[in-house]
View (tube, rainbow, N blue to C red):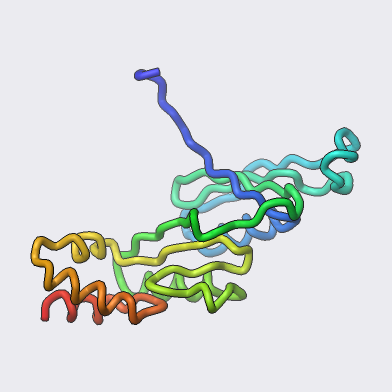
Length: 166
């Protein structure tokens, strides 16, 4: 196993919105694409309950990460226990991803750079240096950053930098 290149693909279970979600996500990320789709047929209808020719799975790629979206029915829901982190270089990037991914999402689920999109998937839109600021060896700096962060929904990088450099 040591010499074998492993590839891990994230599978996202949707009720019936897999294709819609894949198209939504690939419209947001510049380096993205839709891949293969598989469709439900007659076989297994008594188990899955999906109409023939309904998308079963659709592959898509975001920034080099492969995903599979599955139309599996209403049996399972997304939770905040799993989220996707977007490391942003600028406030412009934070604003862009926040605006796009929060459209139609749950506003009550927005805190400290976290949001839940219209499909119930959780995202963290964060500046790439936030972990360094939070883990600073000066506990006062770290505390100031955390205090500022806890006051935010969408992260304001300038406010975090001001708190860090205070």
